[in-house]
Length: 302
Image 1 (cartoon, one colour):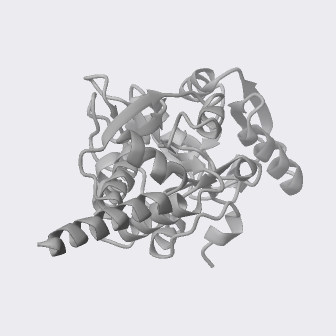
Image 2: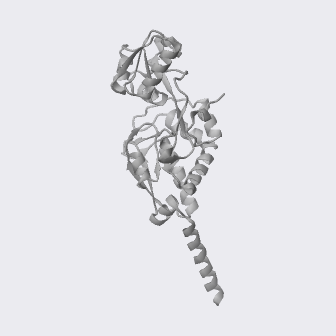
Image 3: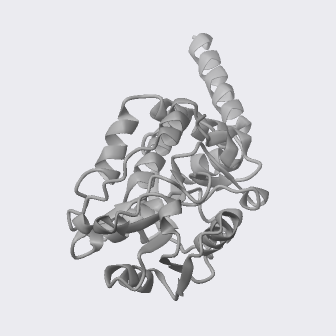
């Protein structure tokens, strides 16, 4: 009669030991039965609000795969998912102070940010390219010689444009714009023959324009590919290991192609816009060999 009691006691001890072994985010989630995802309301198509004011997007879907892995590891399928809207300026402080558990958007993984936060495996690579009207037949950076080219004032894109202009002695007439809307308007109205910006943002701007078919995006880039990653807290090795395993499994499976096409090559909610962003060879390689490195050279395909 004592055997069931002994078995029950051992089971309880095992459960207690398992709970004690947890730390950081996993311990927090286990105790609160809640995981908090940060998103940005207009980081299209990575995280944004759909017609029902629900956070959706490519990065949101990836985060939910990590959440599934957390539920499985903790053996707790009823974990609630909370969503908090964040901005570019407060997303890192809210991660550092423990408000967010994952940040799901288009956050560039770089050396400075890794001093404050960590990132899981890269889910997108963005580089500065230029958009132009197809009729102008401007296909390469050298074709910009003597042309008027715009970029947003104070942006990295403007700095990279100026650097290439000097290095190649192209004589480009650089026209700084106050914001993205003004820059694209300059391109639309032919005040500028090209517009330099992150490639995925160019794709979004073109898709939202009155006549998307008029425009093209250059294949040649002004910069090396910069990695975007899902952000998490630093010095939380067990949670990062889980997130890395979950994303590696996703990125090395056919499902990543499905998710990519859903958000970057198909009509998306709420307005049915298709951004027509092809998966670059560098990103395809990054999915085959997942990495959370901030170094752009890691992602260069020779």
